[in-house]
Length: 196
Ligand SMILES: [Ca+2]
Ligand SMILES: [Ca+2]
Figure 1: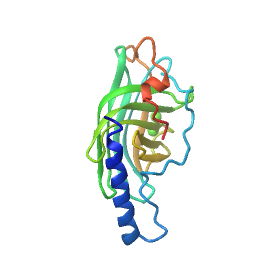
Figure 2: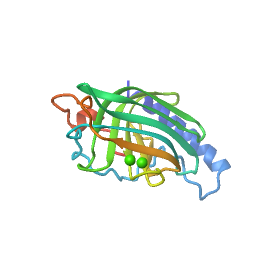
Figure 3: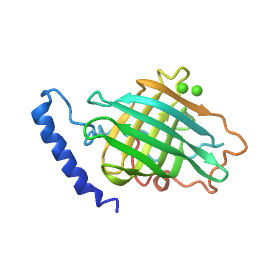
Figure 4: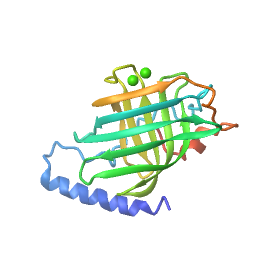
């Protein structure tokens, strides 16, 4: 199922690319669909926080072509399972809307840190069903130094970057923020989707 979206995705990239050639200045970058700077950071070293906790966030970033991408993302451990939801809209043409259907992982990518990755499965209007990995970094309040990034299993990526507006809030553990036992490893939680 996941591999079946690729031809559609490639076609979309070609269309966007062709449109870009006729409507955008030469200096404009393609949408971050093929972006992948290679910056992945912390693969294989992340694990479920000990003790587990949760993170909430909302706001927007500017994509590589200067468009707004709005997000509302929260995740964590809850009563022996993972918990959360991710809603994401990239307002670039063609507009992308992602809505999570399952949270499959929650990890600290470089423990101990104030970064958390939320991994899961989502429905999108452009790419069908994809795996996703969101990175959130809480650098304080107000959230003007907080960061957000997202990568999808089809290659779409907005690398982790400072918010244009909004806030990321990492919350302290409490008696209900207990994750699965045993904790799955990073590959299992994120299905091989690298950090954004
Ligand atoms: Ca914050
Ligand atoms: Ca905070």
